[in-house]
Length: 98
Image 1: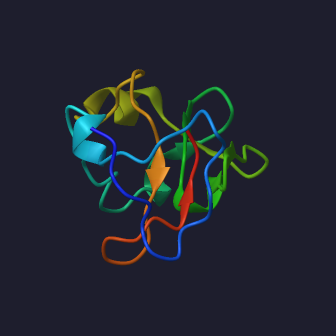
Image 2 (image 1 turned 30 degrees about the vertical axis):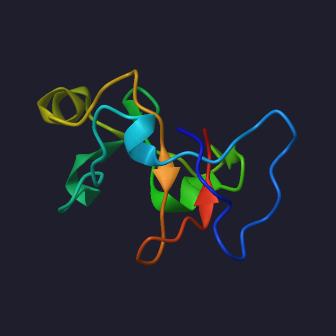
Image 3 (image 1 turned 180 degrees about the vertical axis):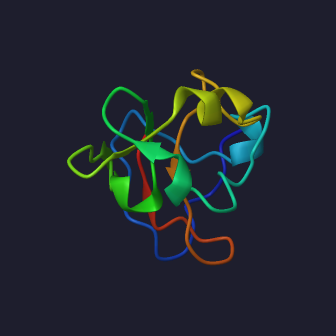
């Protein structure tokens, strides 16, 4: 279902439309919460996106961290079909990368 443009939002390209996340996603969740530093490893690990890797319309991999395969496999939220969104503030999308 198309929704009205949020107040103060930028115009979208002509072939885009505003939608609620619940109309696009089967699940909306916060990312990993907790200590991660002890799970970081070299590039032989699994890329671990952090909020600073998400920029408007882009995923920046220049400073991506890697976690051990064991940590990744234990994560209940790890799923290759996920889309990453960075949401800041209550009910206000600031930056996204799809």
